[in-house]
Image 1 (cartoon, rainbow, N blue to C red):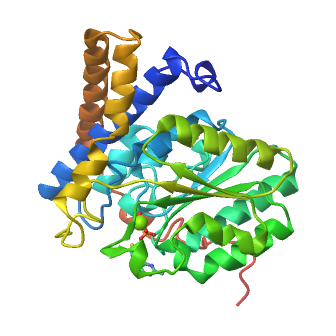
Image 2 (tube, rainbow, N blue to C red; image 1 turned 90 degrees about the vertical axis):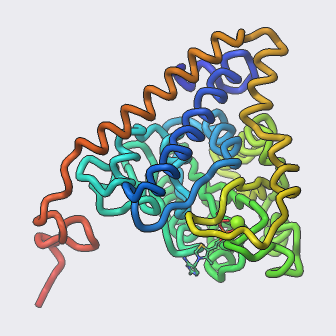
Length: 336
Ligand SMILES: Cc1ncc(C[n+]2csc(CCOP(=O)(O)OP(=O)(O)O)c2C)c(N)n1
Ligand SMILES: [Mg+2]
């Protein structure tokens, strides 16, 4: 895969090839995870990102490696995009010791400080406050890194959002709040939870810059995030981006999908970002079908290897149970 420095800022052949391979990997990884869940190789919760991949793709080309990401439980794609290997992610889904959270987090709690990926959070909206905390750390340390703090349309209804928006604006923290509006919180549509249907307008109350973005377009996502990132790096403070997207699959693995029509799902699939980027590559003659087939082969091999790795990896040791789970035995501030 190309390095990100090759594909930044301008939308060139390289940019589209990067987006294509990344989104194909994210989709194939999750399709495989869905199958493995059906085979009970993966247990517990599992929320797929399929359909929302353009957000991960645009976010990656609009940021640099030092920037931090934090998100909710629908976290596989953003974790892989940020550079955690498919192997470490699949092993985490299996609950194996080689997983990115040592097999103790599972699907909802991917984590790698080394890759700047700070979870994976199961409590709806909790990561909004934590994201601002990460941004405070960057500001305090004097870096020019920004934090991309992702959350859903349902999370926008949590009180945490309002407290965090106030403090983030007060302190001009380098955080970009990204509401991935996929139109539903489990089975409840945005229309059924709020009078304000344009979520980005919530920023007005805090005089926070905000934008509404088409989340089925990698270009639009890139441009929107890049603008917010530039402001954040220069000390201009936070931005709220509402990125309108769609998940093709159910909320989690058991979802009868009675709350939406097949036609609605099909309508979004017509604008599938993976197909759009594929068409852009072919119609501009930036890639031939055999080039795309070679990418697909490479991606398939990466996903297959991740499954083999997860299968062959050991379970966590019993004595790992109480490690890394809040405080350590040798935590220096315990007084009894
Ligand atoms: C505080 C809290 N309340 C309720 C839940 C149960 N719950 C899990 S996911 C979810 C829906 C959230 O939807 P949204 O924020 O739109 O994210 P999406 O699943 O669409 O990505 C709810 C209510 C929870 N995990 N945490
Ligand atoms: Mg949602």
